[in-house]
Length: 73
Image (tube, rainbow, N blue to C red; front, top):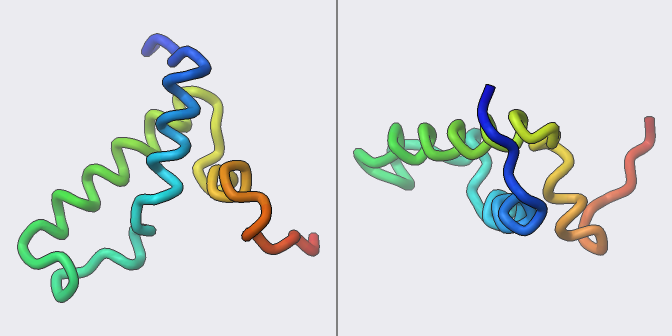
């Protein structure tokens, strides 16, 4: 099992992830031949967040709570 990140490193990763494009936004038209590499980078960061018990889908709301819509479920 991989070693967990310390709180500062984990927060830095969350902040960086919140500025990354969503995988659905990455395509060959926008990113050219690099689109596969960009998707790999996104997957790598998502996997590291998951390994540190962080739900990647919740990161943006945690980092930017004022600009995140409230959930209705």
